[in-house]
Image 1 (tube, helix red, strand yellow):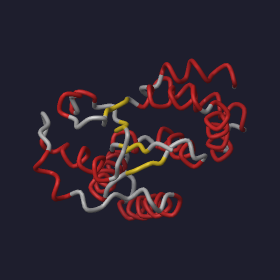
Image 2 (spheres, one colour):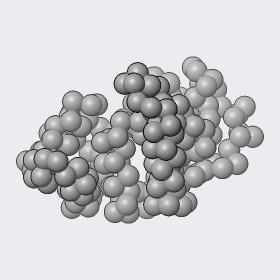
Image 3 (cartoon, one colour):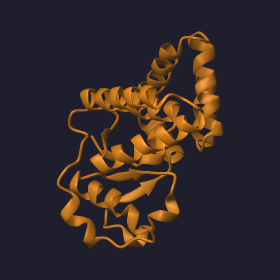
Image 4 (tube, one colour):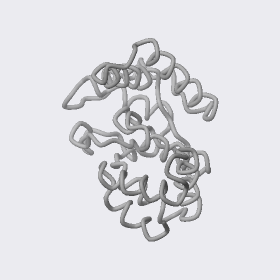
Length: 191
């Protein structure tokens, strides 16, 4: 099974995160993240919720539960010991080096990120590379059709408010509008 380091930007949108993690739950790939990525996730969710006027205590509880659930579901996902490697990587934005070195320390095959410009391929150690969520999900679907469709259905089952068939279509449409148009086009006939 290959390993994918999930950058913060793909973990912040809840339906995107749910789809990625539900696909990982089906053993399509092994997800990875670092304490630094989880810290960025925490700060990003707090900023979003603050703009919406959500009570900070509610947000703290939500993020704490989210991170706890992610850790329980994927106990081998947390990459540690990457800090000494930070100085070995040069990137356009030095604040992104922690992502690459966590991928190296975790033996990731790919970094899933929407921020392709932040991780130029010539700056990454071979054979590490990046993929957008769209490309990553599309490749996963091409290789593991049934587990990926089952994962989308499972996310839809949890949403509940629209009913599973409508919820699955909604999730696919939402992903199509949120950086994953090719994946949405490929899977939409199944829903």
